[in-house]
Length: 209
Image 1: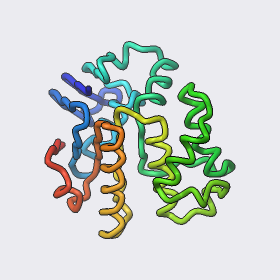
Image 2: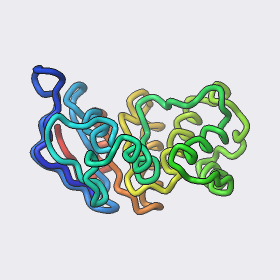
Image 3: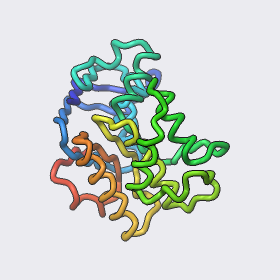
Image 4: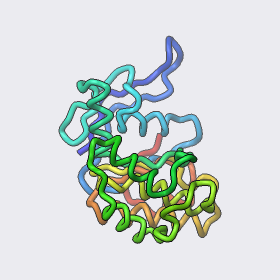
Protein backbone atom coordinates (compact mmCIF):
# COMPACT_ATOMS: atom_id res chain seq x y z
CA UNK A 1 0.00 0.00 0.00
CA UNK A 2 2.82 2.42 0.95
CA UNK A 3 6.39 1.64 -0.03
CA UNK A 4 9.32 4.02 0.38
CA UNK A 5 12.85 3.19 -0.73
CA UNK A 6 16.16 5.05 -0.26
CA UNK A 7 14.53 8.31 0.80
CA UNK A 8 16.70 11.38 1.30
CA UNK A 9 15.47 14.92 1.57
CA UNK A 10 17.57 18.04 1.92
CA UNK A 11 17.43 21.70 1.05
CA UNK A 12 20.23 22.95 -1.17
CA UNK A 13 23.56 21.50 -0.16
CA UNK A 14 22.64 21.34 3.50
CA UNK A 15 22.70 18.25 5.68
CA UNK A 16 19.70 15.96 4.93
CA UNK A 17 16.76 16.56 7.24
CA UNK A 18 15.45 13.08 6.47
CA UNK A 19 17.20 9.83 5.59
CA UNK A 20 15.17 6.62 5.43
CA UNK A 21 16.38 3.40 3.86
CA UNK A 22 12.94 1.88 3.55
CA UNK A 23 9.42 1.73 4.94
CA UNK A 24 6.30 -0.27 4.09
CA UNK A 25 2.76 -0.03 5.45
CA UNK A 26 0.07 -2.46 4.38
CA UNK A 27 -3.66 -1.93 4.00
CA UNK A 28 -5.38 -1.27 7.31
CA UNK A 29 -2.20 -1.06 9.38
CA UNK A 30 -1.86 1.60 12.07
CA UNK A 31 1.59 3.13 12.42
CA UNK A 32 3.08 5.62 14.83
CA UNK A 33 5.88 7.79 13.47
CA UNK A 34 7.82 8.78 16.56
CA UNK A 35 10.70 11.17 17.09
CA UNK A 36 11.82 14.48 18.51
CA UNK A 37 10.91 17.79 16.90
CA UNK A 38 13.03 18.41 13.83
CA UNK A 39 13.76 14.76 13.05
CA UNK A 40 11.80 14.78 9.77
CA UNK A 41 8.38 13.42 10.79
CA UNK A 42 6.37 16.13 9.06
CA UNK A 43 8.67 15.94 6.04
CA UNK A 44 8.02 12.22 5.75
CA UNK A 45 4.25 12.65 6.00
CA UNK A 46 4.36 15.32 3.31
CA UNK A 47 6.38 13.01 1.06
CA UNK A 48 3.82 10.21 1.48
CA UNK A 49 0.99 12.67 0.83
CA UNK A 50 2.46 13.91 -2.43
CA UNK A 51 3.10 17.38 -1.03
CA UNK A 52 6.90 17.23 -1.11
CA UNK A 53 9.03 15.39 -3.64
CA UNK A 54 12.08 13.86 -1.94
CA UNK A 55 15.55 14.78 -3.11
CA UNK A 56 16.21 11.09 -3.71
CA UNK A 57 14.25 7.85 -3.51
CA UNK A 58 11.03 6.25 -4.72
CA UNK A 59 7.55 6.69 -3.26
CA UNK A 60 4.88 4.14 -4.16
CA UNK A 61 1.36 4.66 -2.84
CA UNK A 62 -1.48 2.27 -3.73
CA UNK A 63 0.75 0.74 -6.43
CA UNK A 64 1.28 4.16 -7.98
CA UNK A 65 4.72 5.72 -8.26
CA UNK A 66 3.53 8.99 -6.84
CA UNK A 67 6.10 11.41 -8.21
CA UNK A 68 5.86 10.04 -11.75
CA UNK A 69 2.52 11.86 -11.91
CA UNK A 70 2.12 15.48 -12.96
CA UNK A 71 1.38 17.95 -10.14
CA UNK A 72 -2.32 18.24 -11.05
CA UNK A 73 -2.60 14.44 -11.12
CA UNK A 74 -0.96 14.19 -7.70
CA UNK A 75 -3.45 16.73 -6.33
CA UNK A 76 -6.38 14.71 -7.69
CA UNK A 77 -4.90 11.44 -6.42
CA UNK A 78 -4.38 12.93 -2.96
CA UNK A 79 -7.88 14.33 -2.81
CA UNK A 80 -9.44 10.99 -3.60
CA UNK A 81 -7.09 8.55 -1.85
CA UNK A 82 -5.33 10.33 1.03
CA UNK A 83 -6.84 12.10 4.04
CA UNK A 84 -4.63 14.49 6.00
CA UNK A 85 -5.03 16.02 9.45
CA UNK A 86 -2.46 18.81 9.65
CA UNK A 87 -0.96 20.33 12.81
CA UNK A 88 -3.17 23.35 12.19
CA UNK A 89 -6.74 22.83 11.01
CA UNK A 90 -6.40 25.07 7.91
CA UNK A 91 -10.16 25.60 7.81
CA UNK A 92 -11.43 28.30 5.47
CA UNK A 93 -12.73 30.96 7.81
CA UNK A 94 -15.14 32.51 5.30
CA UNK A 95 -16.92 29.20 4.67
CA UNK A 96 -19.25 27.43 7.08
CA UNK A 97 -18.82 23.81 8.16
CA UNK A 98 -20.83 22.39 5.27
CA UNK A 99 -19.00 24.51 2.72
CA UNK A 100 -15.58 23.54 4.11
CA UNK A 101 -16.50 19.92 3.41
CA UNK A 102 -18.09 20.63 0.03
CA UNK A 103 -14.87 22.24 -1.16
CA UNK A 104 -12.93 19.13 -0.10
CA UNK A 105 -15.14 17.09 -2.45
CA UNK A 106 -14.77 19.68 -5.22
CA UNK A 107 -10.97 19.79 -4.94
CA UNK A 108 -10.86 16.00 -5.26
CA UNK A 109 -12.87 16.20 -8.48
CA UNK A 110 -15.87 14.57 -6.85
CA UNK A 111 -19.50 15.68 -7.07
CA UNK A 112 -21.05 17.40 -4.07
CA UNK A 113 -22.57 14.73 -1.83
CA UNK A 114 -24.48 16.37 1.00
CA UNK A 115 -25.75 13.03 2.27
CA UNK A 116 -22.15 11.96 2.82
CA UNK A 117 -21.36 15.26 4.55
CA UNK A 118 -24.35 14.84 6.85
CA UNK A 119 -23.38 11.26 7.70
CA UNK A 120 -19.80 12.16 8.60
CA UNK A 121 -20.79 15.17 10.68
CA UNK A 122 -23.39 13.15 12.52
CA UNK A 123 -20.86 10.45 13.31
CA UNK A 124 -18.44 13.05 14.69
CA UNK A 125 -21.20 14.83 16.63
CA UNK A 126 -20.94 18.00 14.55
CA UNK A 127 -24.18 18.00 12.59
CA UNK A 128 -25.64 20.72 14.80
CA UNK A 129 -22.77 22.94 13.63
CA UNK A 130 -23.53 22.51 9.92
CA UNK A 131 -24.08 26.22 9.20
CA UNK A 132 -21.59 27.58 11.72
CA UNK A 133 -18.28 29.16 10.75
CA UNK A 134 -14.88 27.99 12.07
CA UNK A 135 -14.65 31.03 14.37
CA UNK A 136 -17.85 29.81 16.08
CA UNK A 137 -16.42 26.37 16.86
CA UNK A 138 -14.57 25.33 19.99
CA UNK A 139 -11.02 24.03 19.62
CA UNK A 140 -12.23 20.45 19.94
CA UNK A 141 -14.97 20.97 17.37
CA UNK A 142 -12.54 22.52 14.90
CA UNK A 143 -10.26 19.53 15.34
CA UNK A 144 -13.14 17.11 14.73
CA UNK A 145 -14.06 19.07 11.61
CA UNK A 146 -10.48 18.65 10.40
CA UNK A 147 -10.86 14.89 10.93
CA UNK A 148 -14.23 14.96 9.13
CA UNK A 149 -12.59 16.64 6.15
CA UNK A 150 -9.79 14.06 6.15
CA UNK A 151 -12.14 11.06 6.08
CA UNK A 152 -14.90 12.61 3.94
CA UNK A 153 -13.82 11.03 0.65
CA UNK A 154 -13.25 7.61 2.28
CA UNK A 155 -9.46 7.65 1.84
CA UNK A 156 -7.34 4.54 1.65
CA UNK A 157 -4.62 6.33 3.65
CA UNK A 158 -5.11 8.59 6.65
CA UNK A 159 -2.21 10.78 7.83
CA UNK A 160 -2.14 12.90 10.98
CA UNK A 161 0.63 15.32 11.98
CA UNK A 162 1.04 15.97 15.73
CA UNK A 163 -2.73 15.73 16.41
CA UNK A 164 -2.26 15.69 20.21
CA UNK A 165 0.49 18.30 20.56
CA UNK A 166 -1.59 20.91 22.39
CA UNK A 167 -4.07 18.63 24.15
CA UNK A 168 -4.40 17.42 27.72
CA UNK A 169 -4.31 13.69 28.47
CA UNK A 170 -8.07 13.17 28.22
CA UNK A 171 -8.52 14.95 24.90
CA UNK A 172 -5.33 13.46 23.46
CA UNK A 173 -6.74 9.98 24.08
CA UNK A 174 -10.05 10.92 22.48
CA UNK A 175 -8.39 12.22 19.32
CA UNK A 176 -6.26 9.10 18.90
CA UNK A 177 -9.32 6.89 19.44
CA UNK A 178 -11.24 8.94 16.89
CA UNK A 179 -8.52 8.60 14.26
CA UNK A 180 -8.16 4.87 14.84
CA UNK A 181 -11.92 4.33 14.73
CA UNK A 182 -12.25 6.27 11.47
CA UNK A 183 -9.33 4.37 9.93
CA UNK A 184 -10.87 1.05 10.93
CA UNK A 185 -14.23 2.03 9.47
CA UNK A 186 -12.71 2.75 6.06
CA UNK A 187 -10.06 0.01 6.29
CA UNK A 188 -7.49 2.75 5.79
CA UNK A 189 -3.81 2.69 6.61
CA UNK A 190 -3.20 5.17 9.43
CA UNK A 191 0.09 6.95 10.09
CA UNK A 192 0.33 9.39 12.98
CA UNK A 193 3.47 11.49 13.41
CA UNK A 194 4.17 12.74 16.92
CA UNK A 195 6.77 13.37 19.59
CA UNK A 196 4.05 12.78 22.22
CA UNK A 197 5.14 9.74 24.24
CA UNK A 198 1.60 9.42 25.68
CA UNK A 199 0.45 8.02 22.33
CA UNK A 200 3.01 5.22 22.20
CA UNK A 201 0.97 2.60 24.07
CA UNK A 202 -1.84 2.86 21.50
CA UNK A 203 0.24 1.40 18.67
CA UNK A 204 2.00 -1.88 18.00
CA UNK A 205 3.76 -0.66 14.85
CA UNK A 206 6.23 2.16 15.47
CA UNK A 207 8.75 3.81 13.16
CA UNK A 208 11.33 5.68 15.22
CA UNK A 209 13.11 8.52 13.45
